[in-house]
Length: 117
Image (cartoon, rainbow, N blue to C red; front, side):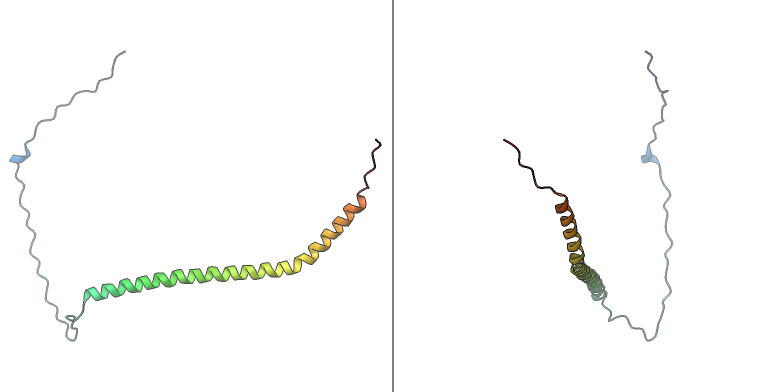
């Protein structure tokens, strides 16, 4: 059986240590000085602001979860109320139907005959 052979390719050796790349210098950007009279931000503490945002986010998450729990509890209460209302109505109708069915079955039953021994 003949084996399939890929053609060989020779890659020349490149010595990267002898290559010199041009130095790229980025221009120095100077931003213009903006003076906003009446706006003094020297007293602003960024760390306190970040902590405040984190606290508010956590509180928002707690309120959201709490609202979901309360909604689930209200749903359960409503379900129990509907179940109790249905159970209050259904037994009299079911009881009548069951007693009618039992009477019908009893009227069709024949007493067992005594077998001769």
